[in-house]
Amino acid sequence: MVGRWVILVTLNLLLFSSLPVMAIVDAEEQPSWRSVGIDPSTWSDGPVEEDTPMKDSYYGNAVFEIEVSYIPGHLVLEDRVEGVVTLELFEQWAPITTQNMIEHIEMGLYDGIFFHRVIDDFVTQSGDPECKSVGVYLPGLPPQCGEGGTGETIPLEHNENLSHVDGAIGMARSLDPDSADAQWYIAETEAHNLDPENRDDEGYATFGIVRDGMSHITAIASVPTSDDPTGEEEIQNPASSAGRPTWEVKIISIKMVGVADPNGVLWADYVPPQEDSNFWANSMGQAVGLGILIAVPAVLFTMVFAAIEPPKSLEQDDFVLDALLHNE
Image (cartoon, rainbow, N blue to C red; front, side, top):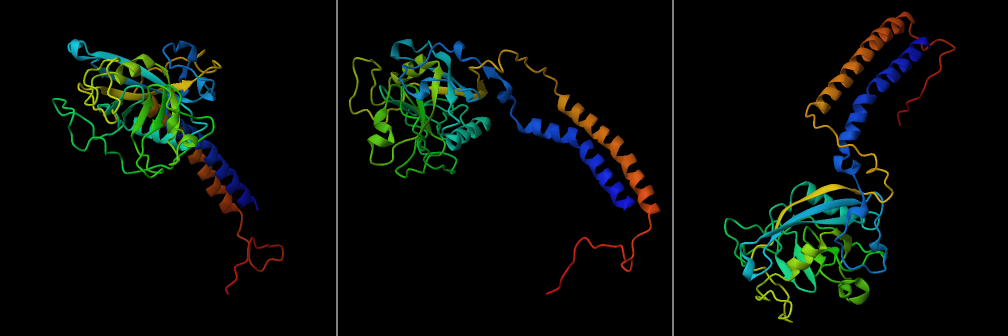
């Protein structure tokens, strides 16, 4: 029996010696932005609030930023405006849809594309990876713009806490309710006619809201388009339905930046990590080295003491089989 105990002790030593490596793997699986807390009190340019659960920020919800570039109107062609729009994702109410968005952001799917559908007093739509200008932007090109995606769809995900309030972000889809892919839109004003209870086609799913930079969304909504070429608030085309901006409304980049932290748990004591490209390599090397230093003596210990104990014989009365194998 001594041999068995020695082997068990050795296996435990080997397990504990690998814990530093396992801890490093777990740390690498968690994206660094999840450790960055963002204070909601720093957001000052939000949408018009409605008395719904969406007006509040919730601890731990993912936050991302859209860096936009646009020309507001015909008379300011030389003055391209750049800004940042910050959004909070309601991961607790729309886990599938928010994870879909996060994955697309982290793979850089939306970097460099443009808003391909802008309808004032309704929505501004983007998210199609096909909508990229090559050299010079032309409103009608590329011809496939507006029909693209990744080819991987998600189911329609509704929650009673989510609706089309001002500044809500929702998923675009085709006639099939479960056809949402990569395209999304931001409501430039409340658009409750898109909520499922107000439609016969199951409606559209919202999953987040603008927290800062809403003035940029409002400005983008009123840029000159193929439907409303003037870009003037007073002169609008009531039949506007698929307006392509006359001048490119570009998404420079979209990136995950942190999590909402209304409790101050993360951001109060947050210290940005030192940029040391060799950190993980050094840590891994130290962990592996420590594991080897522990494992090698343990293995030698097992080999020596396990060999001292003679093996049990099947004829010994005190021998008990751990298991029986039966051939049917």
